[in-house]
Image (tube, rainbow, N blue to C red; front, side, top):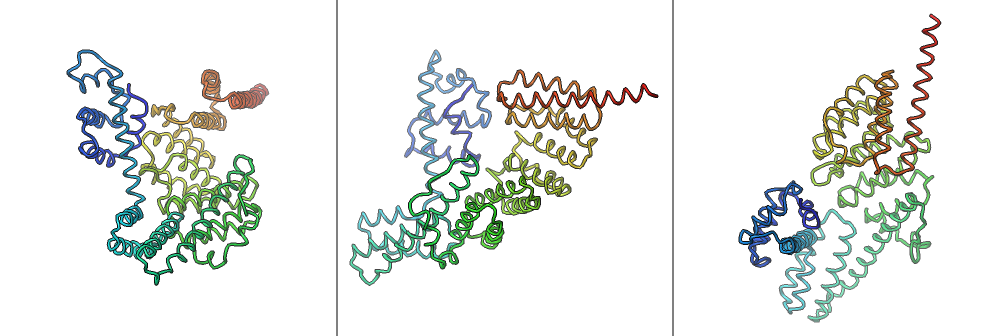
Length: 454
């Protein structure tokens, strides 16, 4: 079985990236070792089932000239391939973030001033047309203007001094946007872990010093500013609604990552409000999730992350949007990763039926999950606990006493044997089992008494 750094790197790549990696490894500019090419070719055929590979068989394929297995030799070749993959990942990340600044810097260093001027003007025009103006946009703008100022200083074109002023303004804008972002990240983290953060120098007066014009001109700064106000005063819900409308209006101006983070923090705020009894915030959270679905912000490598899927169903149940929840599950279950699809779709559909009190459909759906042979080892143990808890509730409400009794005993044995369940959770579920048994015996006792009276 193969495991370790090389397998982690390979598993992080998508199919198209593996095809590009093949060309990268075969390029003599990056790699001259044919053994490395052969090793990758063999591993690529096994993707993504690397755990099935036997190291000694692999060694014979790559080193047919060797008469005996040499683990050190194979490890050295695997390390060489790992280094190549790291170089490839660095390259594709550079491709994503390439903004032209490195090339302009090189033109200045090589005194290619005409090339700098032509290339630099083209980049500035392209940037001026940009719709998405995230934190990286303002930093890139500052870098470009700084390089242009260096260029006019070197070439003595004093008539173009505006680049210095523009660079100062862009640096300020980048700092304000970034400072606000880290402020709301820290404030949000305080709510999660209960640990206070020092928000840095000038934090007390910082918000008051932000020019109102900048808030009106830059949607990113306005969003970060509103989120800081919201998290600084959780009781003032007006900041939430201002921010929500702002994001809907200017969603095209944000990168997907920034928009996703803003939505998630707002959804967490809604969940906190709902737990405090403000039930309308379940509908607000669901509305935000719908916006994320429409913008495809919930997808990671072509799949909806299963925990997001579960959260959406839970919020739908809280908002009593049962029909919408059923439609959502049927429509989007195909977008779950195959590893989790069976469990997530069936368990969540059962949850929707249970919330409506339809225990026949709940039981049918849970039994489909039971007979699907889904391997709960592929998912966090808490989901197995949730599944068992819902099954116990369903048997109890349906008065399936024999099935309930056997399920409680099986659950008790699972908790005793499974070391992944922390002691405090094991104790809580043990108490839950005892309570259900008491309630079951009480209901059975009443029925027996009534039967005797007849």
